[in-house]
Amino acid sequence: MKNKILCNIIASLILEIVTVICSFILPRMIISGFGSEYNGITSSVTQFLSVVTLLRSGIGGVTRAALYKPLMENDVYKISGIIKSTEQFMRKIVYIFSAFLLLFAASYPLLVSEDFSWFYTFTLVLILGITTISQYYFGITYQFLLIADQKTYIYNILQTIATILNTVFSVILINIGVEFRLMKLVSAIVFAAIPIVLYWYVHKKYTILKDVPKDDSCIRQRWDAFVHQIASFIHTNTDLMLLTIFTNLYQVSVYNVYFMVVYGVRRFVTVFTSGVEASIGKLIASKDKQLDKFISVYEFGMNIISTIVFVSTAILIIPFMKVYMMDVADVNYIRPALGYWLVFASFLACIRLPYQNIVESAGHFKETRNGAITEAALNIVLSLVLIHSFGAVGVAVGTAFAMAFRTIQYALYSYKHIMERSYLILLKRMITTCVNIAVIIIPYFLLKLDDVLKNNTDNYFTWITESFLIFMIIAFVSILINAISYHKHFFAAISLITKSKKHK
Image 1 (cartoon, rainbow, N blue to C red):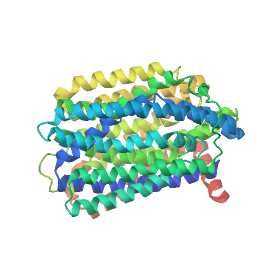
Image 2: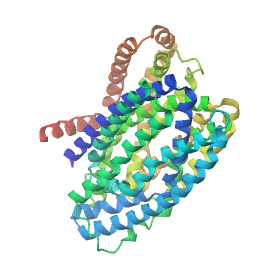
Image 3: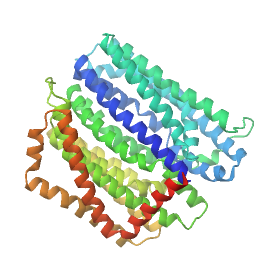
Image 4: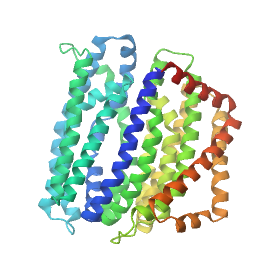
């Protein structure tokens, strides 16, 4: 189990490094080569098309939860029945999404008619939809299987190759001056190849019986998981959708650039959770007594990593934007409040992962659906109220408050109903994290080091040098505080890492 987790972490880390590098290259080149409105429309359309995640009705979580036990027991018949049921369900989604894609492609151009012609936007939407159709028709069921079997690294390797190829092709096409839609068509074809390769790999490495009846028992909690999927969809997509409707593509572009940076950092942090959900699921399925110890170390590690990374990001994001968007004059990209709120929201998303993984691995979708509904309602209401006065910052605030509520709900539920722990343990964890952040942030702003950093950073070399120093100081302070507060968990984490390296 430890080797699989390590492979997943390494593959995920490589993918995130490649993704972050490529995600910084392409948007900047698109903005310079075509304009902010092109970056804005791409981000906006992509977010709207992600509505397909609602159509899959939370099937991913319940499918993975259903696969843990048969994979552990090597029950080929049961695995094949679950795969067949999920695959047929996902094929239906493709048909529904295809109809939605045509309708959306015909109507979305009306929202951006001041910047692009109807036919131009219509064809661009269709091009951007190709990858989604390919993913759901060929590959996503097998992606669920690999995740449940702790082989996420297979998918991550394919995604890494596709990301590199897409960036290389896109840079070449931009430099030779091709039309924007042609560049996006090449990108769509590159990423559409992933699910096809995934389909081939799974059928070669796994025994998937074709003549077994489908096992619909795996999707009994589908509608309860559907509520969770709505909450996830709203958290990820509400901001850009509302900005598209109530502002303009320039503001969408500004928000997306900040979101790209923060989400890239968030994905980097979640690298360390690769394969962990499957491990928790198997420990729960086998009723292993090591579950509590495993969760304690996981929770401890995620709090330290999240604090170090996101406090560093909050301090460094504006100096980075000054360098990254230098010489871009069509819209102001220096928005400190927007950056801080998005960092806070992503920080909450990461520290809640241990609790979310516990709930989903245990299959407690029905029991926690009211929390998902409340999160969705908070996000929509707060964002709608604040967007008119504060624009992009307003929707970021709405997302952060909704995320805070959901994080607390996940933590309280998992402690009481699954782990059967005292809330005092959770309270100590929250206080320790708050003290950790305060010890770093308060002196930083009291000494006005933020002004010094912003004024002295005017190139990438300076930013990287300063970032390394700041990161190391924050890491030292955070590790010291947590090692003192949780010395048992600290040494358990060190022991786990050491054993993994020796075993490897």
